Amino acid sequence: MDNLRHARTLISEASQVVSFSGAGLSAESGIATFRDPDGVWSKVDPAVYASAAGFRARPNEVSEWYGHRRRTLAMTNPNAAHLALAATNWQLHITQNVDNLLERAGANNVVHLHGVLDHDRCQNGCGYHCAVDLSNPPALHTCPDCGSMVRPDVVWFGEMLPELAWHLAETAIEQADVTVVIGTSGEVWPAAGLIGGARTVIAINREPTKIGRHAAVELIGPAATVVPALVSPADPNTR
Ligand code: NAD
Ligand code: ZN
Image (cartoon, rainbow, N blue to C red; front, side, top):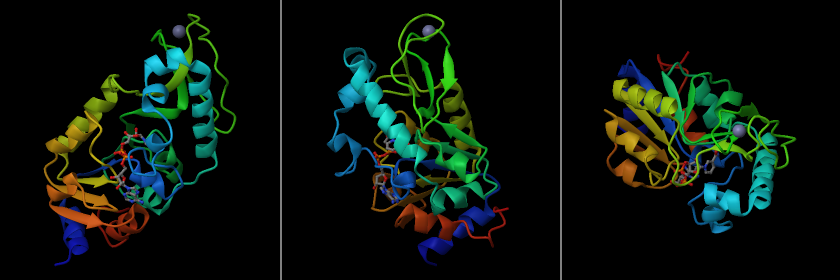
């Protein structure tokens, strides 16, 4: 049996399936990954642009960079992989991505482990939280409730993951018969550790990975080709 058929059989026999995605899921929408050789971290310093200390030291630059990322996201569309996932009846789509492309593809059961670009929150943690218009993101501003700076609602290096998202993801992965891991390097912790709790893993990546080596099935190829091929209309787990 070839790998794709094997993976499809695992999914059709499963009563609960979840997806766990990383930056590779959105790469073909035109959003750069972080750790690949041509990724974001080859161009900007994560210590400045992805840490609370960087934001405190250079708030205008960080805010402008997020403004650029937000405008780019606003001009981007979900790809065939997002659309295929959104059309399944899988229990949960767990993503490390901070974009909203799964939601824009029509998925309403998405959990974001690393926050979202389409919201801001108070840096001081006073509870202030607001939606952001991605096509017209706000300039650096202060919190209306406590006067601290307002920052993107994303998880930066050294920060805790949102508790509810973590709990939902951990529980769903433990309960799922199959976890489909898509486009992630598996090097971002603690998120990558969740995969260790999965019963059966189907790993999809454009290149072989550590996660793939330990998976029941590894499917090598671009997400926008492989995911739709895996999630075919003939699959009883697809609505
Ligand atoms: P990563 O950048 O560390 O790794 C991306 C992985 O995707 C690599 O293993 C690469 O081989 C694979 N990949 C690249 N293009 C692919 C394609 N077309 N099809 C299949 N696989 C492909 O990303 P990560 O593991 O998700 O971790 C980076 C962190 O950075 C994430 O936690 C996330 O928060 C953040 N991030 C988010 C976005 C986004 O929201 N779209 C983009 C970049 C980074
Ligand atoms: Zn505040």
